Image 1 (cartoon, rainbow, N blue to C red):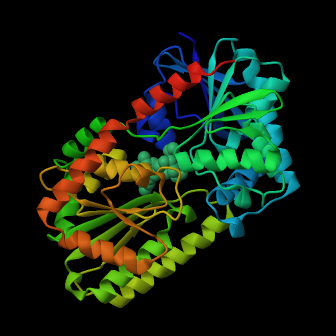
Image 2 (image 1 turned 180 degrees about the vertical axis):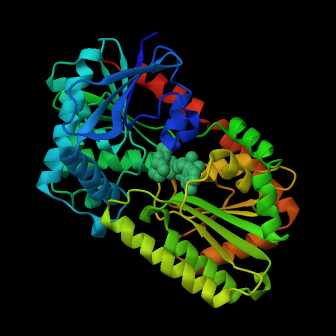
Length: 455
Ligand code: ADQ
């Protein structure tokens, strides 16, 4: 069996599960003894390191590099999060582009390739993750590496008409074609990549391959999942804790509506608060009967757009509560901290509605976690954006267009009124989808396709 080498921008803190985010949780299941995990340490230093720090935990080797302050700025804050992130979420108006940022992005990928190459063996399966590292394969090939290189994109891919807004769009597509396998969450993202390769780079494409400069790249859809059994167990255990008892007491038998996201403009937070405002304005029967808890963990605070989003949400929260609160009822509870995963699982389990309404999302694992956490005897209702990749699998959620605040309000109203039988029927179908498409299954199907690509 070939050795697996995972390359991702952030490497989860050695062996500590509790701190892991979406990508890390999904990949834990394949990070078995013998695996090498390579990436950025999350630290800045005087200079970008040329040799990695090596550590080991539970048989997995971790190799990490520090970034210089200037590389961090151009590569991470700049090109990755102020150029590619908005572009791939269809927000061309928020995209900022500078040649300096792009040069920094290329140079960090070159440094990654140079530091990684000496650690690689010819028969490794090198699996590269996400938009920060698109050029890595091309850099490794330039250095003479001929082994298997696979890529998986955790965010959406856009049609050529959107992608071409980026000045080096064609180069980016060509870089993706240096991989042997390019994986996406959904069929639609894969098709948008194929169309971009054809239109912007002049590649020859079939339904699932791209041929460019004599190299063939396989293209596929691999929907990511969670570890639903573990999340469900954690939700059940959480119900016995003092934390959940305190939440329950504070609710005073009111229905809990819950959302948890990184504080990011792709997650549709203002539209969601607007939707909750429309619910309260149009359906006064829910006043004092429901409380909405929005947990929005602060994220990327050094990017300007995230600071202005935070100010907007502070203002909206004040407006909404000022308009609807009573002396004994505050409709919206808004927090900007991370919540420990077991507590989050408990909150999801006790909620009547899980409100997941991103404007655009690669997959959205919160939707799957909400489903996994439910009590099948008395399940809550998932309200889900049609623009989350998860909507392709979670068809029995109440699917909404997140740009229509009245549609969000209608769905919340329907969820609050929904009879037990319909809640159970919908939940059974969602549960099946979440328990079938797990993180382990995602990894297994990607690696199976990866091993099958001819090189
Ligand atoms: P994210 O944009 O981070 O991931 P998501 O898929 O929802 O979005 O994963 C977030 C993870 O962080 C979940 O496990 C969630 O429980 C946790 N989380 C969110 N808010 C939290 C909070 N306030 N406190 C504690 N934990 C919180 C990117 C893409 C997604 C894609 C994943 C995986 O943007 O579309 O689904 O990668 O590929």
